[in-house]
Each structure stands twice: as structure tokens, then as C-alpha cells.
Length: 82
Length: 206
Ligand SMILES: [Zn+2]
Image (cartoon, rainbow over all chains, first blue to last red; front, side, top):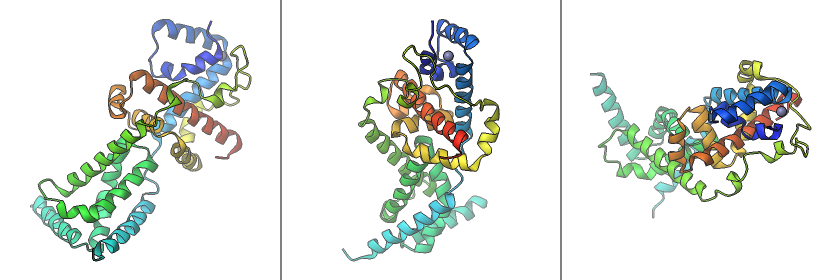
């Protein structure tokens, strides 16, 4: 019989469809009787959705300004006679 | 006609870069950084990608004189970024240590009793609120911060698999890990992010 800890251990494999039918069956059986694990699994699924939607457009302005500074330094060094 | 104009503009820009003209660099940085970030993000998380792109621009200051113009400037810049990212991942692999030892994150493992039952179960359901989670700016900032603290290979595995939706075999290839190691990396990274979101949801603190 699958314990809560075992379910948490294989939770990602379950969500990604990496378990075989026997393992899937024991997960389903456990979920049928355990509300805590249902909540955990739902929340872990929400976590993956969050990662999928995580955008990185922010802070691009700041990045460009940092690059300007570092390029200016590098240019100053490059101008120096050897 | 259009490409002609673009080619001329690019040639002019390249002349400016070779002459080490600061304004030419400012223009090039603005034109090409978004594309370079996209390439870097293919391999790395946001913070590491920013590092790599910054370093690449510093390299370009001297390397532009070796640029032969056989490929376009964009292609050349993207190749520099990709090579740097691959090197960085290769270095990170040498640090592979206990990351594969157990699929269960220690912080989460503590929350079970000796019989393997929840002692401190999740208190809230947020599966239905995924949209609201995505819209939450403070949570996204927090996510950035925590992604930055993940071990490099966990972070890359998560970004490639989750944010970029790469297939498992591609991710294994890029990271040079086995399929079973990838499973552990992904699960460990997800648990850490899960714990972070949980803390944020319950306390509003990152
Ligand atoms: Zn359970």
C-alpha cells in the first residue's frame, strides 16, 4: 500500500505520465482515500503551470543598461595602449 | 530592396563596432540583446542567461575585429552565446553531487511521520487559482529569486522542460544526464518551487 511519502516521491513522474499502469493504479487508489495528497498533487500541478507561464520580459531594460556600462568599461580598457 | 537597406545598416553598424564607437555598441546592444537572451534562455535560467549575455557583449568589444562577416552579425552573436551557455553547463555538471540521491526534498521529507503519513499536510488548495498565481507580480519576483538559488542543473532542467517545453530526450542531451537523473532533477526543483509558493501563499513573504 502506497504511503503519502511514497506518493510525494513519485508525484512529478505521475504528473508527467512517466509511471507504468501498476504504479498509476496505486497512486489512484491512494488519492481516492487521501485528501492531503489530492491537495498536494493539485498544488504541485499548479506549480508546474506557474513555471510554464513564468515570463522573463521584465528587467530587460535594466539588463541593457548594465551591458552599456560593462561595454563602456571594456571599450576604455581596449583603448589603452598595450 | 528591404534586405539591401538592412544589409547596409548592418555593415555600417559593424564598421562602428570595429571602430569601438560607443554609440554603435549602444545601438547593437538594443537590437541584438533580446535575441541573445532568447538563445541563452534555451539553455539557462534567467539570471544565468543575463550573466552570459553580459559577458558576451564584453567579449564582442575585442572579438568583433575577428568577425569575418561570412554569416550575419546576428548569427555570429547567437553562436557566441550558445557556445558560452554550453561551456557553462559543462562546468556545472562537474559539480554534480548528491542531487540524484533522493527524489524527496529534505524540507518536504520532514513533513511526514515515521509511518510515511502527512504530519504537516498542505493547508490550502491553490490548484484552481493557477491563473491568479500567474498574474501575481510579487510572486513572480519571488520565483525569479528562488530560481536563482537552485543548483544550476536543477534550474536548467526545470527551465528547459517546463518553461521551454523541451522534450525529455532533448533536455538529457543538452544537460548530459540520464533519463532517470533528469526525473530526479525535475522533481527536486519542482518541490523547492512548490515550497516557495506555499510559503508565499500563506505568509505573503518570499
Ligand atoms: Zn496521502
